Image (cartoon, rainbow, N blue to C red; front, side, top):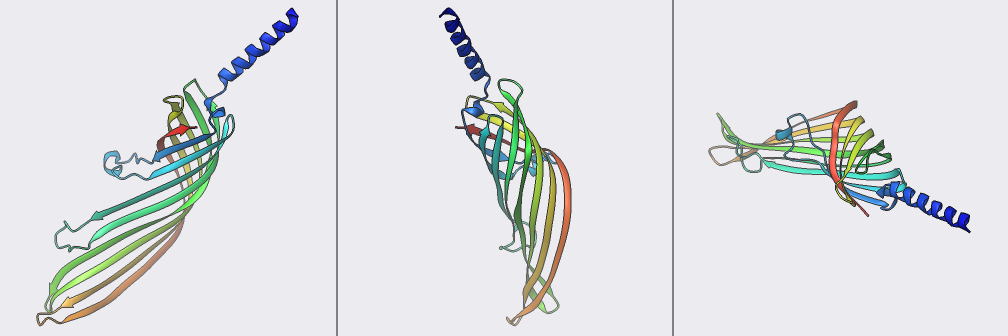
Length: 234
């Protein structure tokens, strides 16, 4: 009986130690995070409007997870403060990207962990610039209205490595570094239309001019800080 009791106590102690060494990710199967993608070059100027995203991870093993990420951005800027530019002139930009991936995780200490993996995905972005101006020539005054539209489609593979720091039992902060391997389809469409108003009040269309530019490129870049964020486990 004494031997049986001793063996039972030893098994209980072993189970307790194993439980204490198991990371929280075995308890909390789901991770939801908010991300931002800062730009290191011109940090204070270029980070006024950041791409924001949502990150979801599903823990499938104590040290492995599948992940899905969505990133978007929208901005609009009025350009009528420039000399000679009329109301209606503006710059607009929006983008949407989606990724899916797999990652492996490793604890460095009780609060700090490293992880690495790969995700693949793609996205679309559109930038438009409208320029409305008034001018004059020997025939009278005229108004010029031009619109330039740039569209971009992309497909990506992104090996990544990240560090995660626990701020509490459920909340963590993290940062990722990636190598982007990207195929980009770029298209720019430029059209200009306008009217001329003569001294006698007659308005005459000036016609339209247009140009379509397309290109296909492959890119590979290392981004030391691709994204930063915070997540909650449940």
